[in-house]
Image 1 (cartoon, rainbow over the protein chains, first blue to last red):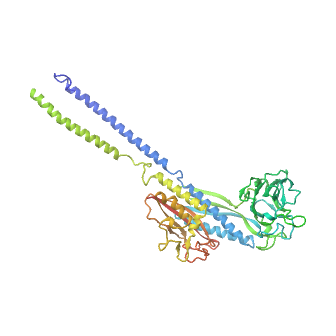
Image 2: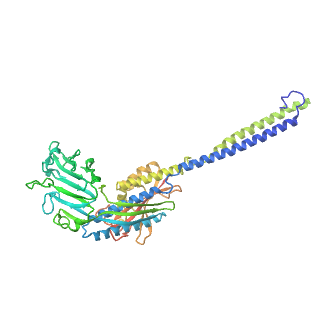
Image 3: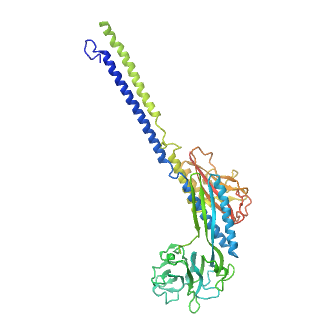
Length: 339
Length: 200
């Protein structure tokens, strides 16, 4: 400035220096404040990113669900294994299942404890049932005494894994409109408020194996499900025909808390079969196995026979970490519908 | 006065040069400083990124879930050579040095999911001993995991009559299976398959 102020004497240098000092001071302050603000902003950005990239599952809830899954799978497998053996009594069966569930609980409890997780299963109850089955594929669906129309179980509130595997060649021919007049095999599920009939037959027109579900109270028939091949696998509780979904079979919720399962017209008037094959079902009524009567044979392999079975297991599962306590009441009844 | 004026521009020239050098140094210094002070945030790409860890643990969990569903996890745990006393095809080591050496579906799944993408992994099988301790058995071992490794595990229930891979031997009849029978009933043991994953 002194240089551009002309050739004369410099204009009051002391005043000029004072101006600059103030300017420097202000500039210094502004820079300092800017730096502090920048530092704060950067910090906030870092912390936000930190939060944003944290797993949403901070407490480990995912693993608790996986433990629950594993326990359901294991209990279902334990029950299936116990039921598969030919058991003499429900008491023996209950003891076997309890021992196995305890063993599973102990093993997983110790294993999870090494990761600082407390797990537990506590048994709330086992529900007795009866497993009814026919394994002789060439046999008619008559009862042990050869009766054509017979009741498998009365007063049941739940059925699971109800599978029928019918041989194509043995099925009666019919069409959906003439089901009642033709002698066609059907399963009747007769409840207090509703009754449903499941017809299994060979369709005359399409030459497929058809399954027609009829509401016996209203008389309305649902659209049939069909399958081809030498055998027809009908899973009544899972609602599948030939492995494919059959919406017509979803009627279990109508049946209420007490119904009877009846096989009708398993043979024609002259004794020819309307169906042959195998079937399997478990009902939540233990009394069938205890007093099989004339309908079922005694002992395995002699179709049809009834065994004591566990219908369902109810237990409480607990999964606890330092940050999470998860407990759930679980009911395991594989292949059960709502009925 | 004239002498002074004559010498003054020379002095200032030196000062200007010095100033220019200082300014240049300052500029270069600022650039260097700015490059060095870039903060390492959780999103900064590196092998220890939190994002990648989250991703890897979810992938490992998903893999274990699907392996449980399709039965290949159980198959891998039972892929045991009873006469050699080790997992099948592992040789003297007793564990696989690459997951694809295990000729089972689980090994192929691990290989495709992780190793193909430059992610290393170990698989340990945790089991309960008769005394109630928990031991670990190596199934796949690629090396010591780094500090930012993540783990995921899944329980597999074994039963007395489960078939081992190498023939008619069941777990109950096996003479060399690593996990003992810890229960009286049909349950044999419950093992946990633990997958440890880290970026190479």
